[in-house]
Amino acid sequence: MESEEHVADQPALILGKHNIRSDYLDKSLFVVVAVVLLFTVVLLYMNLSFQRQNYAAGITAALKSDNVDHAVVIAYTRAWDFAIAKISSIFLAFCLIMVGALYVLRAASVSYSLSVAHKSRKGSLETGSPGLVMITLGVILMAVVMFSTSRVDFQSSDVSRPREPQMIPPDALTTPDERDLPTPRPSKSK
View 1 (cartoon, rainbow, N blue to C red):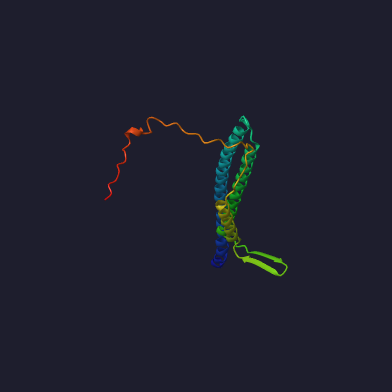
View 2 (view 1 turned 135 degrees about the horizontal axis):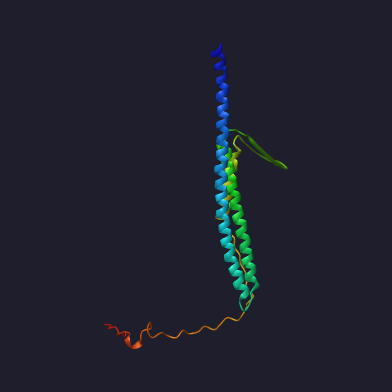
């Protein structure tokens, strides 16, 4: 009878070990992804602070000039706004990719369903792995952010008359003397 009880207890122990391993794996994956995201946050913060210093230096130089051009200040400010939006989008893409990776690598399975309807058009997305959807959205967002350009144009308020072209005085060291140049010889025609 003892052997029957021992055999009956084994699946529960194996199942219990499986749950312990699964919990350990889930926690380990969470820690790894959290560390990677923290590292990403630090790198993006350093990049953003470096850009802030550059834009602040440009704004300060524009404001300290003799003829203050407010269009330049506005252009630097708009460029700074675009930099913040781009860095924030990159961070969101990293979050989507990392959290999606957590779903993919977890032992548990979760299904996902999304449906959209507008007038006569309908669309739906159903998947057994929402992690793959999140990874795909993160990669698409990263590609859009990396391949998009933000253009900041400005027109200076300094509308002065164009200068007359000036002749640059010849330099004795770089300009050959006309006397040293070979003289063209007349060609002999028959």
